[in-house]
Image (cartoon, rainbow over all chains, first blue to last red; front, side, top):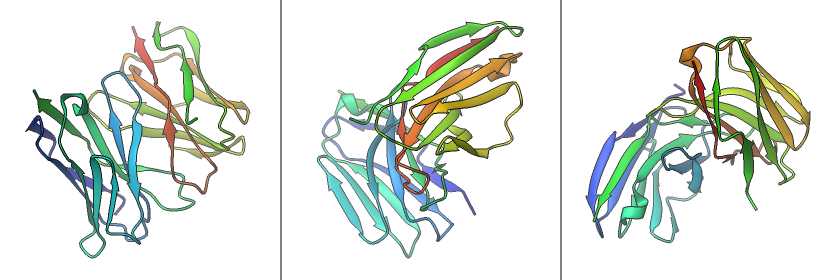
Length: 112
Length: 113
């Protein structure tokens, strides 16, 4: 019940296209859903995060869509750029839990 | 400033060596974390310190020994490691144990020969 399932495992998108990564969770107690971006040899960097009281959050070209009833959330990267090529991890947590439950990761490649 | 620093960037050690990894943050955060990350996998939680006390140990082998000397520093002491312990070791911090947002450092790439 603590799992977060992430898909696809890898994704190739053309420059200027939309990248979409999906995550699903089971534990309805989770109330915090961040996305991390990780470049090779670097630590994960917090990209954007959402709580279940909103269905969408947008920061620049990055948007999280959240569907509480389906227990799913997704990351949309608009106008994808080669510099967005990285591994993306979704995660879930809850207040006081002290743990982030990570998805398995998606390797995104944006072709020029 | 959401910076967590880690030293060294790279470390090569033999199975009989003793070494330490260091993590530092100056954001006033009171919770600090150690993660281990293998290639193409998500980070795996190892330890959590909250207000300088160990609050979570994810059944990590005793050859890994964490230490939190003060609220800004976190160490990971390594002894008698195995080749399978080779990985990227990540430190993270959050405002406190109740706040979920974790900020990661750049990691230490460890190779055990």
